Every structure is written in C-alpha cells, then in structure tokens.
Length: 281
Image (tube, rainbow, N blue to C red; front, side):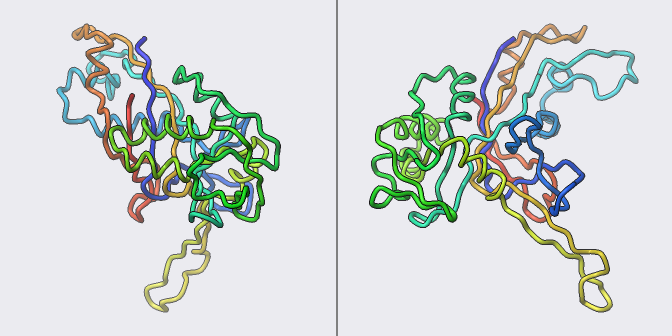
C-alpha cells in the first residue's frame, strides 16, 4: 500500500460533530476517546474527497472509492483508505502577537512517526513553553496564553519544528512560513490538553420567529468549533484497484488525488463553517 501524509488547514471555524451531547454544549465536536483531542473522522474526509473528484472518469472513480451501489452486481472495496485527521496546531489567544499556534510533545511524537521526521522534541515542565528565537508571542522570557503565564524554555527545537510544519503548510511561500514560525509555540502536554478542552470556539445560535421577530421557543443552542487556523494531519493509503475491469496500480490511482485544494468539511457549511485547505504530501 502506498502511504501519503495530508494536512488540513482550517480557513474558517470547523465543526465536525458527534450529533449528541452529554454536557452544556448542545453540538460538540468529534474527539478521540483516549486523548479527548479534537479530530476529523476519516469517513467525513473520504466522503468530501469522493464528491470533490466526481469529474474524473467513472471507472477510476469506482476503483478509488468503491462502487456507490451493488445494483450492477459488482462489490469491492475502494483502493483509498483515509485515516482520521488528528489535531496538530490549535490557535490560542495570546497577550503578545494576537495568537499563538500551539502544539505539544505528545502530538509532535505522533506527527514525527507518521512523517518520518527527526527533529528533537523538547521536554517541558507544566509551566514552560518553547518558542522560536524571533517569536512575537514571547516577551521578557514569558508567554501569556489565555490566563496562563508560562516561562520560555531554552533551546532551538521550536524553530526547527516551526519550519518543518510551515514548509508542509505553505510550500514555496517564504513569507507565510516566517509568519507561522513567529507565532509557533510548543506547550507541555498537560497545558495543551487543558487548552484543547477549554479554548475551542463556542458559538450561540438562535432561530428567529417570523411573526414576532424574537427567538423561537426552544431555538437557542450552542455549537463547538475548532477555530480558524487550526491544523490537522493524517495518513492516506492507496492500494491497487480491486475492480474486475480496472487493474490500475496504486501510484496511478494516487496521482488522481489533488496535491492541494480547498474543501468544505463537516456541518454548518451554509453559515461558513468548514472551509479547509487540503494538502497532500
């Protein structure tokens, strides 16, 4: 199986929900059961890609995604396997520099595994943060995020990781790569986990009664979103075609996938949610 890494860069708030809630937020976002970190299920992304590639020839489309129905008597799995998109970067409100693009060692270890990266990952105490040398979010040895006061840890590991991620997100765009690095920060696992629970975007929604022009009865609800500028990554696998009438190799089918495009992912798209850049390495 041919393996490729993809990135999702949210250009607007992103809502891929679970359809149910046990808390105060009526429509929460999907999260990993083990880590409770936000994610985009692979099934959600695969459906969007299937629709995005509807213009390719029918035989290749069926080989890549599988038949849409069994009416023609043919049943086989598609050649494309899409993994869940895991959270890589979470934008956090910063006292300096407006916003910080935050990640943590736990996430970077998994990211390095999937991308075969070898940059060192700094060990951090709960009260520390690693930032690049030209960071705009660090001032006088401190990083102030939300209501947290963190001390800047020594070392250049943050600069190396900022460059690696920025090159994947903004290939050939030096200005954007530099700007990303100036806002990049590595937080401790415990602090990042706390912020991933508390620093997502919660929006109140209402439906207005046409006659009274007031909120309709029972029509107030709260939605959770990943904020714009969030970044996720995942792995896509492509095998050879399993269709009887198409014996395309994995590399040929993988070449049909876009290297960069803009997708609408998740719910609430009519109110601007889910606009994402999709980048395939």
